[in-house]
Image (cartoon, rainbow, N blue to C red; front, side):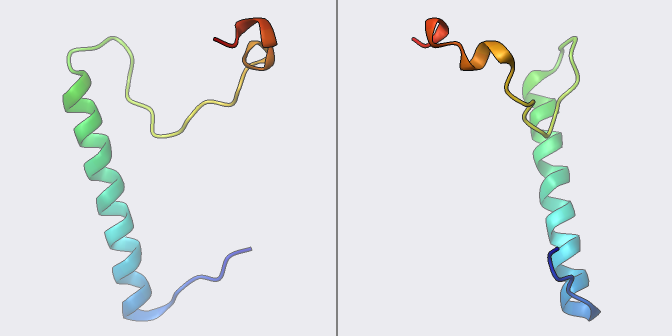
Length: 57
């Protein structure tokens, strides 16, 4: 388990990380608008077909 920063410095780092994530989400939303699918921050897990050697290009 990772250690958590406490106090003003830890709070500033957490705020900066959240702000950076929010900015990335906003940029992704702006770049894909209008779109039918919402923006996702996480990468989906590989599917069974991703490991299929016939599908490698």
